[in-house]
Length: 185
Image 1 (cartoon, rainbow, N blue to C red):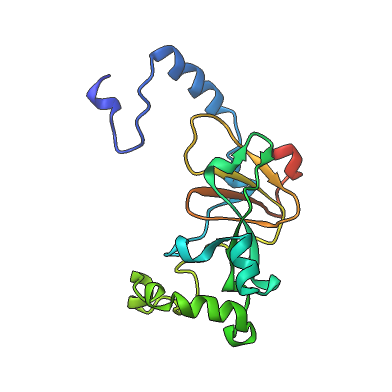
Image 2: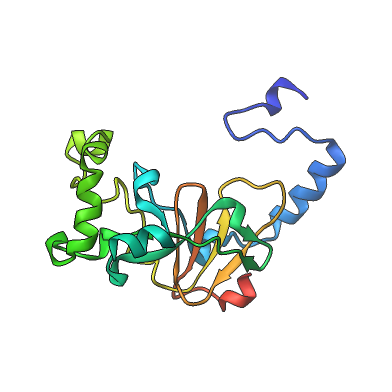
């Protein structure tokens, strides 16, 4: 590769023939970000506290309003979401945790750990909330989920808006300009 080709953009180290094909494709395409909103998954700052199994939900009797199904990178297959039975305690949809005494009791047991998060220490979140609930206003919607990093294309439709991904996943949310999600998929 010529030094002049290695600029501040991302480098693609493939041969000239592949580069020509990709350039021809890219010259006549519409970028996904122009017809949909693409966002990274949420950041809890302490996944080990917020991701729980059914046994934990049952033992603490955590209120169903605060439970979402968790999707991880390895759960996203082409056109399919493999649910492993892991859930998120999702306090982002409530104003007052005291209204949910069982979830509050569970989180109180982990309060010291939650208060060790950098975002809490900076004052960026309450002790019982996610550190960065990215796009929380969209996660209840139907969306396409994809891994943050994958060696092949893996996109799956969450038609009910029931899954929440964390930082190892991305979500493609529809906008007013979006074609049907099945078409995008």
